[in-house]
Structures are given as C-alpha cells and as structure tokens.
Length: 621
Image (cartoon, rainbow, N blue to C red; front, side):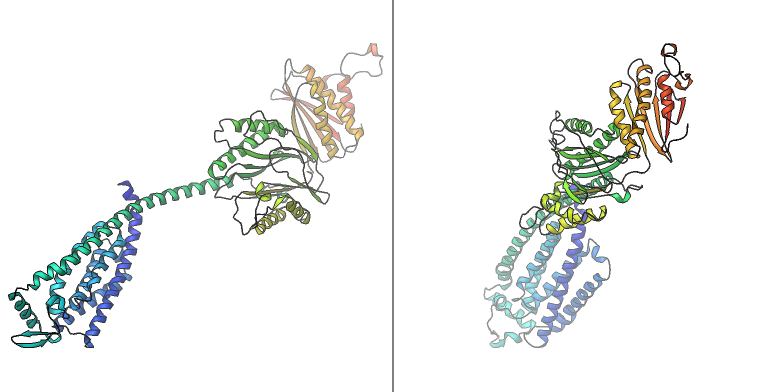
C-alpha cells in the first residue's frame, strides 16, 4: 500500500500523457474514418444503406471525436480519471464503424486499442478495453455482412450471386438481397451466422486475448517498475536534498572574509570533484597578532570524506586556539583524536602554519601534505621540508615544527594534490614544475587574482578530462601588523626564561628597538619574572606576559595569581652605602624602575598586575 502511494504522482503524470496520446489516436482514427467516407463518395467501393450508415452514424461520430479531442486541449478534463474510458470508447466506436464499412480491410485496427491502453500501465483499463473490443468486434462482423462492403469470405459469394434465377452484382446487392442470400445459403446447409462466429470471430478473439494477456503482463510489470522508480526517485530526491544540506554545511565551514587590513591579502577557493568533497582550507586569528593557515585533503570522496573533513577542521581549529603556537603539538593531538575510533581507516594530509604578524615568523608543520609555495624576493619555490605522517594513521606519529621568517610582501600558496595531479586528455599531469612556472610568471598578481588564475589554468589544462579530485587553493600575502598586542602564558619556572627572552626580543625587534635597549628591557623583564617565579607560588603557577604598542611607548603587563605583593612599596636601596650597610632585597625592583620609564601595580580579581612602560624615544628621568 505504501509503495502504491509513493507511485501515485508518477501514475498521475503518466495518465495525463497517456490521455493526450489516446486523444491523438482518436483524432487520427476520426481522420481515417473521414477518408473512408470520402473514398465512398468517390465511388471507390459500394456500401448499402449509406444514408443510414454514413449520415446518421459516421458523421455524428466524426463530430463527437473531433470536438472532444479539441475540447480536451482547452480544459483540464484530460486530468480526470474517467476521461481515459471516454477516450477509449470513442476510439473503439470509430474502429467499429470502419470495420462495419470495410469488413475485410479493418481487421488489424482492433488490436490498436489494446496497444494504446498499454500506455496507462493499468490492468483494469486493459480489461475494460478487451471486453469492449470483443463486444464491438462481434457486432461489427454481423453489421458488416449486411451494411458494409461485400466480403466474399463472410457471404460465400463470388462477383455475382443468383437470387430466384437472377444474377445480381454483389456491389449492387441491397440490404434485403443480402439477407435473402444468407437465408438461401442457410437452407442449403451453409449457416453463415455460425461460420462467421467460428471461423472469423473466434480466431480474432483468440488473437486479441493473446495481445491482451501480453499487455496485462507488460502493464503489471511496468506498474511494479513504476513503484520501484518512485521509491528510487524519492530516495534520490532525499539523497540529493541531504547532499545539498551537506554541501551547504561544508561551505559554511569555510572561513569568512577577514574584516581587517588582511582582507585583500588572503583568498581561498575549493571545487569538489563530487557534490561534496574532502578538501578544506581555513584561516583564522589565534589572537590579534597571530594568524593560522590550514589546508587539508581527506582520503576518499563523498559524504564519509566530508564528515571526516569537518571533524578535522573543527579539531585543528580548536587545538590551535588552545595551544596557540606549537604546530607540532597541535598536529600530534589532532592525530591522536583522529586515530580514535577511525574504523573506516580514513586519513588526512594537513599543513598548518602560524604566522606572527608582528615579527614575520612562520611556524609550520606538514602532516603528509604537498609542499607549499613561498614567493620571496621575486622567486617562487617550494618550502622543502620533510613531511610527517598523515593524520589518522598511527597514534605514535611524531611531527616536527619548522620556523622561517617572512619578509614584507612574501606570498604563501597552499594547495591540494587536485592541482598537481590534474590530468589532460593525454593523461599528462599538471605537475609541480608547471605549478612553479605559473607561480613565477604571475608572482606579481594580487592574491585573489593569482588564485583564480591558477584555478583557470588548471581547468584549461584538463578541460577534456573529467575532474577526479577536489581542487583547493589558499593564497596569502604577508604584511607586518603596525599595531601590536601579544599575550602569552608561561609556567612560573626559571627554566622558562629562554622562552620569555625569545618572546620579548622578537616583538621588540619588530618595533625597531636597538640591541642595547632590548638587552636592558630583557634585564628588567628577567627581574620581574624571577621574583614572581620564586616567591609568588608555593607550588606550580603561571605568569601571563602581555606586550602592546601604543603610540610612542610599549607596555609589558605581568599577571599572576600568587601571593598578593606590591613591589612598589619597597623602599629604594641606598646604592651609595657600603655593601655591609645595605638592607637585603629591593635592588632588583630598583633596577627595573631605572630601566623602565613607568611602573604601575594593582591587585584585581585575585591577581597581581604589574605594568612596565618603555618609551620609544628615551624619556628624561
């Protein structure tokens, strides 16, 4: 029952088309009847009682068939369920009339009705047509004996018949003479009524039964196929709808255009080989001064790859925002998560880079992905580093972080193997060499134009070959950030001093501080960090150090959740006193005061907050 309901729409549409086809059949049969009538009028054959037959029967039939056929084209009657019964009845009446007029020429027309109703794929309609055809064919045979063209087979007569010793031309035999001739034959033992039934009607009925039986089998089988088609259509529609939703979700995962000065410096595109793909690219700010770039390629195609892709994208983004700078650690944690419950054995190649927008330092890790392109100093080249193992393969995989420094205007081109492995009609790969040549040729283009032109070049190269892999490109042009805000959390451990110095030195270099000033500022930072590490916590703790540039000065802010302590309350030591006369402590903070231009302390939200300010142009103390 459910299957039948699902097929209703197909049945309805098919019935409308079948009604139109049958209406055309009625029109053609009416025209055929009209031709027969014209042939009669020209004297080509003789029909008895033509006034009754042609004027009182044939002409009204023509009017009804022609009028109803035209009528259906101008109304919605063709959509009504009973309209098909009306049409087939009209059609068979025309066939009946033709067979009455021409008994020996219209025999094959009886099968036409059974053939036409097969288009309805309805056993009930076929049965109705078969019964009506059998009835009309029966009466047509006997009406044709008396009213139609003389048929020697039905009437057992040659060109002439003898009635009461008089020869009569069969073409001129009247209705009464035919009856007299049939009765004459019956008296001689030749019963034409019975023989017509046995030798003419029954064989034709058997043939029609065979045709109807074949039609019934076809209708039943086709109806079943329509149900299957309906189910498949519904399934395909549902799958298509789901794919469209998945495609929309996938494209929503892709990053939105940046709204700051980097808006025109970054551009990406992705073209799946199927409705949805396994490639993705991403870019996002970790903080104000760090930008992450990601490109990845999941093994396989379709929905499984797309689901794995979205999981990878979410995982890499969240871990990057958590760990902020260590790309190798981010890849390791991502790999462990992706290996967990990976029963489908899907893996993903991934390239993750984090750019310090102040210093230009690029930290990146390659997990089995293509080598990206760096356009530096007017030359395009691959960042040649040994790639690690793909994500999702082995939990024990180890990943390595590589660091390089970008210069103002350098460009990074990230891509998937859909570019290098694109084929042309000669089965030649686009390849890395062609990619580097393109990058050198168009190195001066704006990033958006570069990416679009690269995609167009690949499309032109493989235009006669079906795209079999997803194509993804992400381009980025580096420009140093003019305003700086940087924040990082360190363990309150003296072992972290080297990391603290690296952090502060890179930022101060980006702000064009001299080596001397950097050394002095690092000395002050060291004093503050050591004091917090030694005295703020009983056990483990953390220290957050923030740096920002504001107009003509830079500001370092230290935050810790240790014991409340205001170092500014300490009295400055007497540096002119002898060593044995000086009080213990206070010298470190005094040194900090002398090196920095301004120092502030506050205790807020259970945190010690110490702010150090240093002017770019040395302020008079």
